[in-house]
Length: 329
Ligand SMILES: Nc1nc2c(ncn2[C@@H]2O[C@H](COP(=O)(O)OP(=O)(O)O)[C@@H](O)[C@H]2O)c(=O)[nH]1
Ligand SMILES: [Mg+2]
Image 1 (cartoon, rainbow, N blue to C red):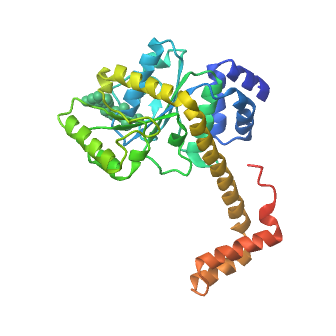
Image 2 (cartoon, protein in one colour):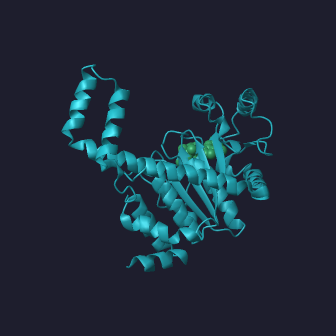
Image 3 (cartoon, rainbow, N blue to C red):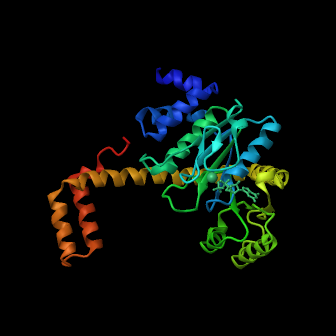
């Protein structure tokens, strides 16, 4: 199979081509990056939603319910799960009662779990590429699931058009999430498992945290809604779908989506460049005796780390070694 055929098949929406393409980027294969280069001009059409929150709150179940709702609207769906602890496997959400078999059999739904592999910039970067592939393949709605916020260098969640923070009542984890300052991140907050008696307490707590952080007002004309759902039985899903659509309308108005995407792409370009520079530097010093001597100086407290870093960079600049082509991945 030549690259161009793969790209053509992908652009035509071929699911097998899509699966193969995602494997290429997941494995950090040069053909994968080439493919993304080729299809990139055809991306930007998908609505990308990021779902984040502690494990077990019901993100996957929620995405399952949203997938069903979107299919009923006749929209095609792509799901990317970057959650090593509860991956989607064929026919089931691993270790879970919720079956997504119906979706796996539906041509209009493409579900993929991404494992932790050593791609440049890590799993999140691979996931970003995968999201582009889904987009190019014509998936209208792309749901991305990740655990936690802000751990990775390149955080896929930052690249969604709409970020949904999912929490559940009565869990210490959720309170942790509140404390971790993640409240600035979401566009929509979902309290799932809302059949729990502590749900309204949780909603009040979150409102409190939002107002303490001065986030309870309008941010760029948008007030973050808190929505109660029971993903497992579909309760609240209609309201969530409505809010997601409202948010999309909001960001589409006045070009807010362009500003958002520009900001995200800026940080992605910087993150990839940083990862490459770091890799190049690591390669340079790997068998460098002079660097070892420099390090000895630091270890023996004759030179401080910052001065050693300055010396390392100056030396690189002088030799020109660090300047050579950073464009190859
Ligand atoms: N009681 C209740 N359980 C739910 C609800 N939504 C999901 N669950 C269950 O919570 C568990 C974790 O769900 P999952 O979607 O895997 O959470 P994730 O780790 O955030 O993706 C599963 O056993 C689900 O069946 C809900 O609305 N109510
Ligand atoms: Mg999950």
